[in-house]
Image: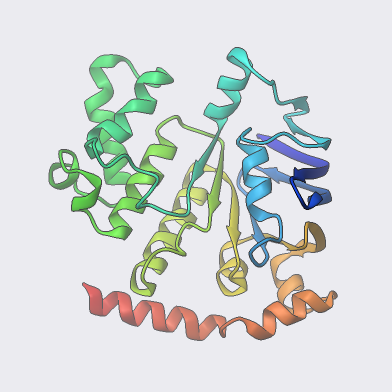
Length: 269
């Protein structure tokens, strides 16, 4: 069981001409293996700041992040090991893959860097990972990202994230750049991987409908503060904070969302 603790984290940015901006204000949560937490909020709520701190692209102003009770190392082998344990799927599959490299290269690179399998087994592991995300290796391995659809690119990004065999996955708005017809397939894939591999998933989104269906717990952020946190059904069906109620009122009906997505996905085939 892997446990990631985000403890009383505050992040303050010093902005020239604007003074200080408090992007996060004393935010705490715990993510464990076999669990999905939905992190919900509008743009500017602090969601992406949390992702940057977890991936060590930013450091907290106050508070700390612990992996299995130990603070995240700031450098060296310890930080590298942490980054192997926690991987990220970015929002934009168009920008997160290098257009000059093949799909084989993108999935193969973390296998080599993290020495996941012996060198003689790398090709077979690339194929296994691509098949795991429902892609045909023979059809995509030698292609460049621009030759794939948006949904296929995001599946490649997921395969790359899984290559290091992480325990935790941060999915930052993983379907917001995709057509509605492709979103349900990618979300279902992430849910299947979470269950089958026992991953802990932090699902970052502005969409309460998908957060409820794909999360065990939901945290709602507003202007850097956690205004609501609890089991997904409790947060959605019995919101206590006015901001959560506003988000729920502005969100599409979840059942209608999934019916529409399934219908469009069927038409896209």
